[in-house]
Length: 79
Image (cartoon, one colour):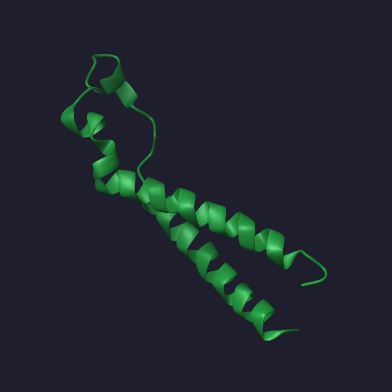
């Protein structure tokens, strides 16, 4: 097993653990009864991309892309 492959396995495991913790740290997407009365259009609802929840969502997407790319690279038999 080459050194590059071992490094990729270690990075892959770190990404797996980070994804687990970040997904668990996010709030649920259910709006509850607030959506019925129109409370979903608050300041925090409109500026969600700048909040901590928006940042967690962006990091989750980036880690998912890295996860998929590294998984594909590790499954190449000639590598």
